[in-house]
Amino acid sequence: LVLEEVPAVGYGDIGGLGEQIELIRDAVELPFLHPDLYREHRLTPPRGVLLYGPPGCGKTLIAKAVAASLGAGGRGEAYFLNIKGPQLLDKYVGETERRIRVIFARAREKAATGVPVVVFFDEMDSLFRTRGSGRSSDVETTVVPQMLAEIDGVDELDNVVVIGATNREDMIDPAILRPGRLDVKIRINRPDAAAAQEILARHLTANLPLDPAELAAHRGDREATAASLRRVVVEALYARNEATAVLEITEAHTVSGASTRVLHLADLTSGAMLAAIVSRAKTASIKDELAGGAGGLSAARLRSAVKTEARQNEEITGATTPEGWARLLGTRTSQILSVRRLGKEST
Ligand code: ADP
Image (tube, rainbow, N blue to C red; front, side, top):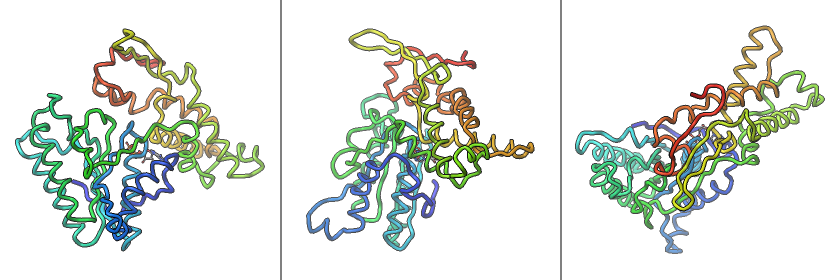
């Protein structure tokens, strides 16, 4: 169980998710900041929000920004409880339920002191397997009811907000989404090219060391140079060619049999991937400087980082089980017949 104080993430640090941020602010912040208006309108605020979508696209960032913003609306303090669903599961009978009780007791204790608390459950599907799916009998019979009871108990305290995150919303027990529970569902998608520009604007900024040649080409204008470098990343990443082809998947379809498609980086981009590309280019810049070069972020370093990302993306190379692929691709396990890695290092 991790207890963090006010996280240092603001809505301004999040790119390309303006609409989603507005939805969550309306659902969570408005009732928190204006409880009297809600009482007057007899509008019951939601007890929580479910953020769903592929990994690395900003769900945790948003939850942290909500906590920080609730804190800023009050005394400046807020608590963010970050709970990884699978880490809560324990094979010993009753242990998972005990941990869930401890977490909510802790949240109540903190909230009772007047500090807003965000309880964030990452990979929530691991705790909420649809009942009857036969995957894990303990989760179905005792963990789900325990979680529901805790969430239902939250309304005694206005200071606790539950935010769940998952990339397998089809696995989540519908009981959790009923009114008065996590009844606001917000989809967090992979970024398209425009959103990628906005995300890069948070990671590749004009105040970073920039390659002198690139700067000179833009007459020393740092903003223009950074913007042009961001465009280079987006163009390289969203191109569909051999260099960006990563996976070939064969899927089963009920009506049309099976089909094969090639996935490119563009189909698998995430904020995390964009951040990783910029980090790789920064490392290259540092190494160049240490070797006596001029260093700085450059188009060449960013393009090379995109290429490396195509071969070494953690999310892609980390998926090895059918379950892992289904998570990555956002489909059901039963639909995937085979997955083949493309590129130099494919086996
Ligand atoms: P998720 O919870 O959806 O798996 P995170 O919020 O943990 O993803 O994102 C992981 C990292 O990727 C962040 O710490 C950040 O560096 C980067 N990132 C992801 N999405 C965005 C975004 N929309 N804007 C800026 N950075 C992002």
